[in-house]
Amino acid sequence: MIPEALERILRSFPAVAVALSGGVDSAVLAAAAVRILGPERVRTLTAVGPIFPFEEGQWARRTADLLGTDHREVFFDPLDLPAFLENPPDRCYYCKRELLVRFQEEAGGRVLCDGTQADDLRSDRPGLRALRELGVRSPLAEAGLSKEEVRALARNLGLPQARKPPSPCLATRFPPGEPVRREALVRVARAEETLRKRLGLEVLRVRFVRGEARLEVPPSEMERVFARRREISRCLLDLGFKRVSLDLIGYF
Image 1 (cartoon, rainbow, N blue to C red):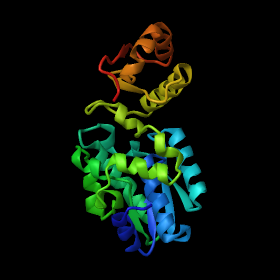
Image 2 (cartoon, one colour):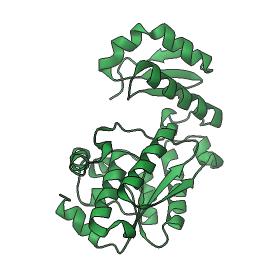
Image 3 (cartoon, helix red, strand yellow):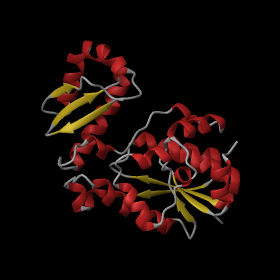
């Protein structure tokens, strides 16, 4: 069930610590590591703090319980980092590097691994530089597994994340150059949580642009959301956004 290349990589480690975000990639890596090495040789580490959606922490805890790993939560607040606050194009590098350093401290000598997969290597991800600099291993990418192959493996392993949409950190809602501030992060988190409940949508993004909210939803939901534009606008204005717009391209 575990691809041979991935099994070979994992068997080369005496013990691992997996950066477990709650998403499908890291859940698959943790599950595969438990299958190959046994739960006693796998520690899972989850970051919690103001930039991480609360529900992602819940997913990570449930996954660790399901797999029976030694699970540790690491509080991390990148708002203490000047480079993060100013939000340059390589913001993710500064954030990820500091977080991985803390994960390495919690790894207890285990090989620290993350859920980067092969398709991630083809996109512009400044955080990948932090992985290389710190020697963090990415077994899924090393095994050549694509995002679709990882999702298929999640289904085979019986993981609840098999159909779960991605939910990256809240800082991704701020375009480069838009300063990231604590109050704005809280506003975005509340906006997305409220709209998910009201609209019944799993996937949506509220982008923060100069104090305005730019709502992104899948193209298939565009008309339904537009029909409720007054309700949605009132909700977001009440949360403190200056204006509300709907991205006509939609979220993919």
